Length: 421
Length: 143
Ligand SMILES: Cc1ncc(COP(=O)(O)O)c(C=O)c1O
Image (cartoon, rainbow over all chains, first blue to last red):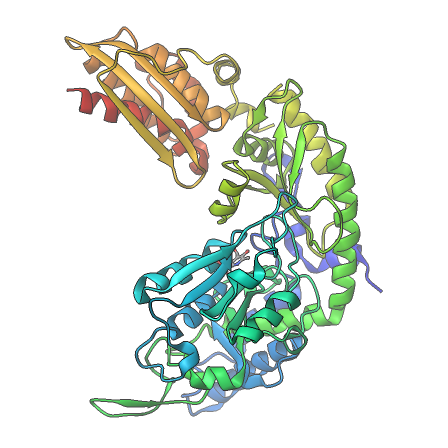
């Protein structure tokens, strides 16, 4: 039984007081989520009683640390229903996972034809991507002479699939798109794009940074080739992220970073590499962070991702209604509560119809009401250019948010309109 | 409310009634500055004659802090000498970068002291400085 009051008790920060006696209304989980005691305690316990290096320390602590680190991999694999634990590669965040895959393409030491990229080949992304799913592909295009192409976004904030067959074609090597937009909240439907990618023999990657924390995600059911996500947005710590990839592809890919633990044998002039996932985990990994992420996955599983999703869906409906009643507020993204998550970005005008800059909105919300939102372009500048606006204010919801907090946001926005009236 | 220490009445007044806004001819230099973290931008022109600032004109988009700062800059710089105005820019910069620990020299800064509260918000300091840095750049280029 999902009980938001009980859940809030797990997150100590939610009951803290801000300077001036304000209570905290945290509506910035899309940026980074807060952490429950279950994660904090697991990490502290590991540091206090079990910590050592993993994989290479041949003593009791080394064995305990290694076991805890590998248990975390099992927990994450189970969380996204990976067919094999070896398909879970720990990275430092989603950005690194995306870069890791992008660097496998056009890499001269990659022998598999699927990763060969050169002039005439195409890479497909979309206009609603986070910079982390744009820049690595721009770099790939620059390295190889391939062409970067993208899906455009409709006024409603959905991917425009009209040109799908032209955009994804025989020249396409990889399609990489966001599963849930960090600005619009849009949840993209994967299957039509994937079907086309399969038809033309292209690979497909999903940036699931904003979906894995908020809904049940089953990588097998999705059917794509790679999925990236990040620990700090799913009640886990920062400094740890995940790449899931099909075993057969991970095996075919060249290593990303070289170093300790990713090797099998090293000579002065060459090396052979460890099997996946270790091939992609050079150097001492973020051990305690990985263990914290395992605890986060178990915590969310204990609550139930279907319930998390249902709670957020109800809150999102409530928020769309409440914000819809504010004159001069325009939601950038789907206004219907269908195929969208709890991330709501908007612009705001005062009652005379002048724009109020998101910085001013965010500052008043924070200073006067303790409401934390994000303001700016949220690392998605091309999307803001598409809508012809420099910035938005974004409220992003999570399992611990309440309708009272949305009421507080609506009150706060009315006050902002008065101050800048 | 803490915000009130930042949104001084004077700042809101300048924001709602910007002084000297709009790009004017003649001018000796024009610059365009942006704040990459938030997308605020300003285009600013200066007209200088024999060491005297005859006009500072500007057009831009941004938050109340960046817009009000440009308006105050226009008032302070127009009609003063280049040298005086650069002294004000230096003092304003020192105040903004002082993390709220610096005592402002009101004699030098005039209305610009109203921005003292902004210095406590690292994320907003760049907003206040945008037009002032653009002005400094424009003056150098006009020489
Ligand atoms: C959709 C999306 N992709 C990628 C990222 C990057 O995550 P990280 O900064 O943890 O690499 C984010 C988070 O900011 C995001 O929202």
